[in-house]
Structure formats: structure tokens, C-alpha cells
Amino acid sequence: MTIEVRIPTILRPLTSGEKLVSAQGATLQEVVNDLELNYPGISERLIDESGLRRFINIYVNDEDVRFLSGLQSAIGENDSITILPAVAGG
Amino acid sequence: MRFDSLLDSVGHTPLVGLPRLSPSADVRLWAKLEDRNPTGSVKDRAALAMILDAERRGVLTPGATLLEPTSGNTGISLAMVAKQRGYQLVCVMPENTSVERAQLLAIWGAKVIYSPAAGGSNEAVRVAKGLAAENPDWVMLYQYGNPANALAHYENTGPELLADLPAITHFVAGLGTTGTLMGVGRFFRENKPDVSIIAAEPRYGELVYGLRNLDEGFIPELYDETLLTTRFSVGPRDAVKRTRELLELEGIFAGVSTGAILHAALGIAAKAVAAKESADIAFIVCDGGWKYLSTGVYEGTLDEAEDAIDGQLWA
Image (tube, rainbow over all chains, first blue to last red; front, top):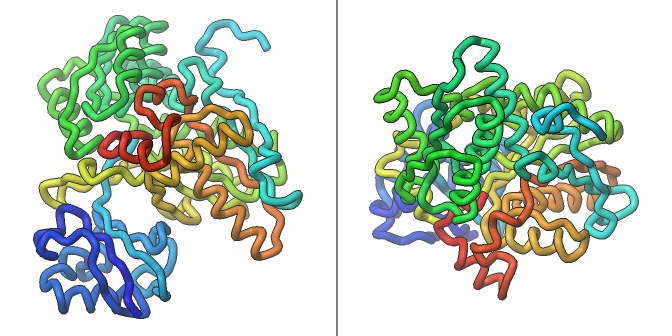
């Protein structure tokens, strides 16, 4: 199962500049693990010992994973994942 | 309706049904028309509340200068209130905002200092904090961390919604300072805890997320995620599409952030229909479309509109 992951500008040095990459996994944690295999160093930019990093937001089909099951959120066929830094609005 | 002054007329906005966008007789959408406030946006509530609160606390003295980082609407609201109450206002605004916002700020007598487009409101906050340190006599009300912002919605917006729609099941609003969602969310947690609180967060073009490192990320001090049921990120294409549908089907001429909120509300409505549940979903119309005419979002194809607002702070 191949999942599309959108990478924010700030993490693209790790993906050779690619803004859209593919990964595999049935949960978000598995997807991050798979990303790490192809793009070493990306995992620690997203996750620390307490889980998802404070200024990182990850969305599965536009829904914030913090309100799903966090890193254990289920990922299905045709789902899209978007990673964004937390920025100010208003 | 009669009021002693313009400031007394803030709030008490209409809640209107959307017969054509509501998916069924049992799943209904309701729009709270915050564009009916004095400067035409929901921010009049927070601006008035923050200034009155600062006066009560003795922080604001006659003739004082206010300073605020704002992508526009809060600044316009503060400028209107400041003018009535005898204060000067300096706004720090990202340069990638619509020209109408700067024009309106000038009309109400505010001074604008621009912050760089890259980094969006993060940069405006950073520049404003620097100016505050250099000008200790200026008063920064700081909408992102000022409890009076959320309190305005706890004391007014929430109770207005419950009074007008006792059967409310869902509330949807935009996530910027988080003031609307935190205030209304806390009100419903205490008064009707089964109401779902849904955030629609605008997803801008890449320029806005152009941080130098992740430590520059920003989460408003007001934000308490336990008050939210869920949170959606809505991109410009969906936001523009829904802004146009709201105009086409229901005659409501709203700004683009409202389109993002409507997109989330329609997603919730579709889930309720699929689950064969009834729902009364209220959402915020943040402002009218007037300030966005120059951006081109109401003209041409969706592709053209999406291109036109790429890199802009459209919410």
C-alpha cells in the first residue's frame, strides 16, 4: 500500500527537495518508519521521546492526527498525509 | 434595535439557516453572520473586549499607543475601537495581505508597519515583540495570548448560539488566535457538553510556512486542544470553492476563511448523513467578501483563483 506524503519546505533538504514522496505503512508510525529508511534523519525531526514534536502538525486526509489516534492512526489505501510546521494565524 | 453607541452594538449577530447547502431535513447548517459587526468581522468582539479589559486593569491611560501583530481583521477592529476611546494604534502586518486591509486601517487612523511575507504571522508576532521591547510605553494587547479574546466568545458568542439554536450539535470556526473556538468551546463544555467543537485551520501556500527552523513554530498561548473535538486543515482550493458556493446557493458574500470553515462544516454534515444521525451545525461567517475583491477569488476559474491567492494570508 503506497501513501502520498507532503513534505514542508523546512524538511525538504532531507528528501532531496522533493515535496511529495511515497511511503508504506498501515499506521502513521509505520509510515514514519518507512520514510526514515529512505530519508534518514526525518523521523527525529517529526517525533521525540514524548511523541509528535510540539511544532509539527500531521494531517491524514486533512484531519489533525492528534485528534485521531496520534502515531497509531490507521492509514488506508488512497489516504494522503500532510506534514506542516505550526505557524501563527489570525 | 437601538444602542447607545456603535461599540454597544458589537455582537448579537443573526444566525441564518442554509436551506440549499444543508444536505437533508435532519442535517441542517446555520451561519452566524459575524460580518454584521461594526467593522464587518468577528474580530470586533475580541478587540472591544481586550480594550475594555485593559482599561479596567488600568493598563490603558488616555492617549496611550496600542501595538498589535495582525494579519488585518483584528487590527481593523482595534483601530475602530481605539478611535472611539482615544488611543493610537500601530499594527504589525505581514506584507502578503490584501490591499483593502491596509486601506481600512488607514481610514480608522492606524499606522502600519509591515513584516516580511515569508513566515506569515509568525514574523508579525516576532517583529511586534521586538517593537514592544523597544517601546515600553506602548501597550500590546496580544490577541494570541490575551484571555479577554476568548472570554468575549465565552460570554457572548457561545450564549448567543445556544439561545438561538438550543438543539445545536456542532460548532465550527476558524483557527487563528484560537479565541473563538476556545471561548465558545469552554462555554459549551460547561453548558452543553455534547456539542462537538470543530476547528478549520487555513492551509496557506508554502511561503507562509517558510520557517528557518522548527523551533520558530508558533502555538497561540490561548490554545487548549482538550476543548476541541477535531481539527481540519483546509487548503485554498476548497476554501475558494465553498466561498463561491455560499454566494451562489445562499446569497451570502463572505471572505475566504469562511469558505474554509464551511468546507469543514459540510464534511461533518456528510458524516452525519452517512451515519443517519440528525445534526444542527452552526458555523462562523468571519467577515464579508469586500476586503478580498482585489485578490481575484471571486472571478475566473478555480485554478486562477487558487493561483491568485497562493502565498497570501487569505484567512
